[in-house]
Length: 402
View 1: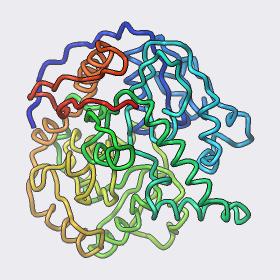
View 2: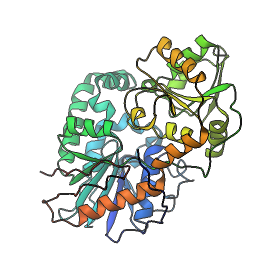
View 3: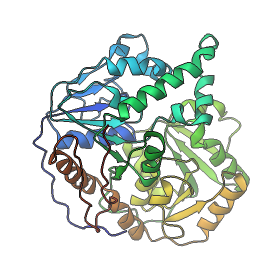
View 4: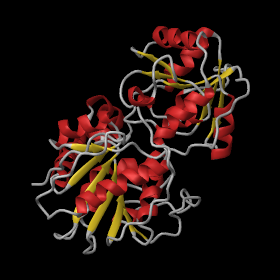
């Protein structure tokens, strides 16, 4: 995949705009995209369903004007917002956005369902269509988190959420997907084409060149579909140490006293995460992700990646060059991939060079090009020219508006 070496600063865009985001409670991958949008629009306010100022106190957007929905007034909303999903269509629809030229959504739920001014163009950077609404297995998982009294109404609630999401999608002038994998899901669920612009990843100036440690690393917000259980069982089987960084509901399933080969560190600041990426023998990435920023961060630090070969990992990990992909989510298959990885030699400089294709400078250039293409056409007659072939982003495709 070619990469342009220049690193020129990207000037803010001149259009009047507002930013929308599903919920702004913790800095994860979607919030890093939102923060990059803030660089393109430094004076634009942010609209979100739920906001936890303490959870994002270290964000560059901490001082931004933030407007929330009525969900913000519910007790415990900042912690229990996933359980409020049935109320989110109404909450989003009741947010009336001001009359601006551009509404730029960062969305994995219903940020695009806020009500825009009819004259505004709506561009949605889609991290993924809602997994809990469209994926049957994850929908069942979500249902189990609800109080028993609410479970009989779950099917109807999800049907209304899906309907509201699809109605909101029809108002979008252009979808931008964070991977080809997500672009396919956008087409499947929303019947719309999407531009692919990979999300921004923090890339250190150089990778770690020293010897690697004797432990593997698993990082993220741990929910069942991320398959932390597979990483733990695989390391037990092959007798390897595992360090787990991050929080999430799935951690409650594991007893640290039993998993003596695992060190659970919980949430850690960036400097601790980066220190482990510089020293780990490899990053284990056993779940199906839409893109996956953590594997690219690992490569940027010279750390090879062992990943399930479905979804975004197939777009960031080059088999036997930057890591190893395995085909089935079984301990046998993952253990074979781990042992195969140990038999390979990886060049940290080559891993770092590969990761630089996903840096923030590239993201800002590509986003500026896409947005200027969108804003340069008449409302309702959107045709976006194809991108330059050397660009990391895919060819720009026309958006869809009904």
